Length: 454
Image 1: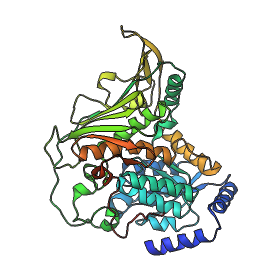
Image 2: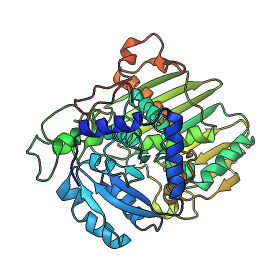
Image 3: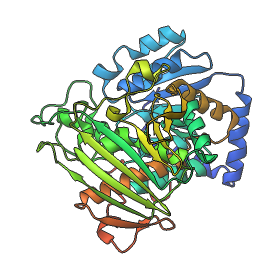
Image 4: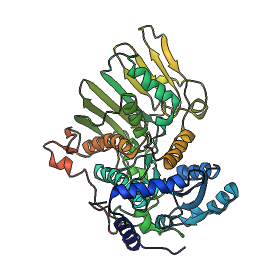
């Protein structure tokens, strides 16, 4: 397949759009095309072959309703490697390895892509996919600044694409039951919710710059991020420690708990104000992102807090036997728990499995409870069903953007030294704080630029 440039890809995209008189016409054609494939395999590509992307690729290749035509990564040696052969053997149909995602977008046979790149590529990769008429499953966080998240929503709507975010807890039965329990008044009024992301960790030391490894397209890896010399810590070994590629551990892990909190509370979109403090409290190391963070979100008649650490060795993420079984974690040392404080009871809730329990009396007796397992497969299945039916997924990009916004607002606060920031839900800007508003959008490196009009 011929490798295409970004310019030729976008030129063809514009010509395709112009061929239709309106977005409504485009919607009709696209829906008809998907309907014609109702009983056929959905042809897909997986972009980004780190641990999460490799797992997605293998799971998709095992499905009889999917044909995985491509796996893609900028690292041809360490990441692509023998993946195409392995996927071909699993699904018994050809799978190609490519280093440029635009080759996938240029293939008219491809229906959908799963994006599991480094976080700084999520927005542009999704927008390119929508412009090419592909549906998208994009891993969390969908964006690393508010402006690009809003552009993702605009692209999904403009090109009538299903765009689902990898906040898979929304597909978990026990999470839905918790939301129903709360909605029906089981906890009474809820003035306070505490969200935790308290994890262990070590100091982060950045090694010296070095030569680009063989088989790595480093310019493509950097993409929208600022140009810099190759460094392993800015690549596979530590990119989550730098603002150029991530939103720190709050964007990597904490967004799951924040999204669950939003879901069980009825998907409140915007806080009135946020107050965030944090920084390099435990380690004076080479990371840019905080190792400790405390956030308070203000809503009408409700406060939601978030606490994060990357140094506490006694805190434990929910283990696999609980995630996939019928058991509860030990809540006091559960790294990723959510505590919902109601006027009638207190709910402890786990993410990625772990279930929930409600305390209703001072003596610690358990009231209602529900075991629960993680929902990776259910979430992938929902996405594929939405590709066929054209309905909006439970983790639609608008919802994903609103959850990611909680991360963005908090990180803007911590980058400004910690101060209370008031937020306008209509303009999606801070009130009376131009220094904070300047951080709503990041710079993009040419030619990897998201335009104002997507």
